[in-house]
Amino acid sequence: MKKQLANMRDSIATARTLSEALPYLQRYAGAVVVVKFGGNAMGDEEAMAEFARDIVLMRQVGVNPVVVHGGGPMINDLLGRLGIKSEFVRGKRVTDKATVEVVEMVLSGLVNKRIVQAINDQGGRAVGISGKDDDLMVCVADDPELGFVGKPVEMNVQVLRDLYGAGIIPVVAPVATGMEDNETFNVNGDTAAGAIAGALQADRLILLTDVAGVKDETGAVVTQLSPEQVRDLTERGVIAGGMIPKTETALAALEAGVRAVVILDGRIPNACLLELFTDHGAGSLIRSLPPRVKPRGAA
Image 1 (cartoon, rainbow, N blue to C red):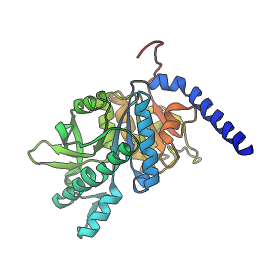
Image 2: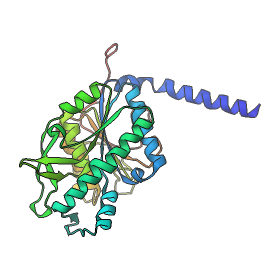
Image 3: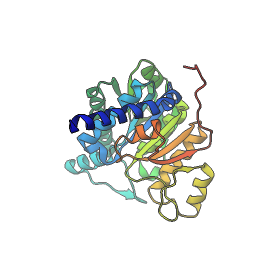
C-alpha cells in the first residue's frame, strides 16, 4: 500500500511538472535551438543517453534542435596512440596536416556517429554531417602560427534547415572546408556552434560545459547577464581563462541575431530541459533581446 501511495505521488508530481511546462512548450514550438555538446558527458554512456533523450524530447515537442559537438579528449587519445606529438603556441594546439587528418577522422567519424547513434537509439532521427557538407562552414586560418585552425567566414546553413524541416536532428562535427581546394580546418566547437546559431538566427544557443556558468567576484554564478555586464566582468578580469572564449562566442552570436545564449553546466541531469521548460535555469543566460513570447494561436 505504501509503495502504491509513493508511486501515485510520483505520478502526480510528474503530471504537475508536465502541466507547468505548457507555457514553455508553447513558447519554444518551432524555435531553433543550437546545442554545443562536449566535455565529460561525451565519454560517459549514461550521460550520452540522457543527453540524447533530452534532444529527442525537444524535437518531439516541436523544438528544432541542432547539435554541434567537440571531441578534444578523443583527439588527444588517438594522436597519442599514433605517436603524433602536439606543439602548442600560447596554450593552443598547432594543427598541421597530419593532425588535421586525425581531427577529421575523430570528429566526423567516431564522435559524430556515436552521438547520432545515441539519438537514434532513443527514438529520434539524427543525421551526422560536418562543416564540409554542402559547404556548411567555410573558414580561413584563425592564426597562421596555429596552422589549420579555422575561423568561419562563410556559412551556408540551408542544409540544416532542410534536415530539421524534415523532422531530422542535425549533428554537426566542427570540421570545415577552406577557401582553397582540398583544404580542411579544425574549428573550436564553441566557435562553430556560435557561427551556426548566428547564421540560423536561432532562438537559443546552449553551450554545455563542465562548469556551473559565469561567476562574479564572489564566485557565485550569475544567472542573467547583458552583453554590457559580460564586457565589464571581462575588463575587470572576473571572467578569465577558459570562460573568455565562451563569452566571446556568446557575444558574437547575439550580435549575429541569436536571441539568447546560455552557458550551462552539462553535468546537471536534464540540463537542457531545465533551461528551456522550467523556471529553474541551470546556468548563465546572456541576452540583449526581450524574451520570445509566442502569440496566442500562432504555430
